Length: 338
Ligand code: AMP
Ligand code: TRP
Image 1 (cartoon, helix red, strand yellow):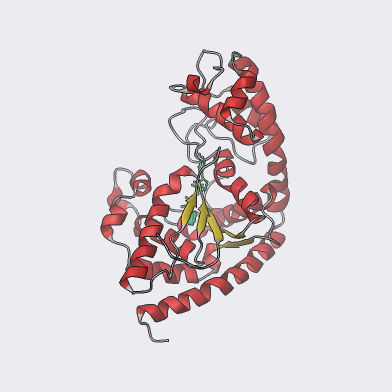
Image 2 (cartoon, rainbow, N blue to C red):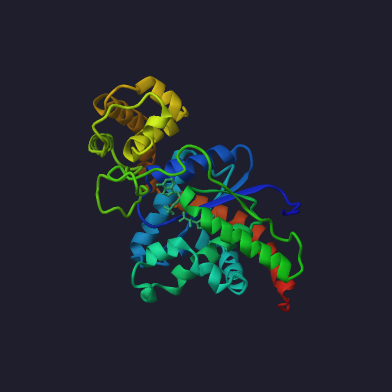
């Protein structure tokens, strides 16, 4: 057990590659919005993580503004939470190097996301992709963040962050210097699946254009994608048990539940016995109702780079004011001359 005594602090980030989608919203951004009212929160744009795979420079810049707009449009308030881009706060890279010397090769060898992203030809992956989870640990611990809201797919990276924090505290005889950060994963929406394949998570890189609902999709696109969503011929069951072995049906019910704040059981009490011909239009109306206004606001914000830049600059300054003193302490602990 950690005996860390510092304040509770929430931190999370999203990579600035590809469009924001319903999975990002339900698994991450919506939690960011809820948490900001209860705790000190830092939310950043992980542009340094993005370049672990090739990014066109101009696209990377646009994507960074895109994610910033998604945070704000979804309701993250820059006057309450600190919003910034990772590359603007040098402390992330500084701590990441030190953590590269704390983390063990064997730990990184076990990371499933690296294996997925590197594919068959791992020899050709960037070194950055391999050490990606070490930078992630630095992102979190440079603020001594205690809680990290993320989707299910980040569980293993959070465990690695805890391992790095624990090993640093132990090796340098600095008990409880770093907290062991807790993932906040639970809750509806932690794993939204592809609309075309209930065994794959919804992902911006899905080759099928109907698999993923993007936050900037207009009402017609949202309705079309839901209409085309893969299902089975059975009507919806009346009880949750009936969703077992029906991953596509379970996913659509889960999306409905996550967006209404109801449980799966409550959704099935309402729609059990009805076919997808009735359920899909109700789901499409709901998604349009909740997501289209966010998309509209994103479009407005994305046209105003000057405003977004000012939000990020202000956030980066606040973030650095927390992180720089932590790096200073770490350098001293490690034995660097001041
Ligand atoms: P990424 O776009 O991979 O950088 O993910 C950003 C955040 O969204 C992370 O917290 C992920 O865990 C979360 N996320 C990504 N895809 C999904 C999904 N299909 N369902 C739920 N959460 C997701
Ligand atoms: N790896 C995360 C993702 O793909 C993004 C991320 C980078 C992150 N650094 C982080 C999330 C720190 C939480 C905390 O979603």
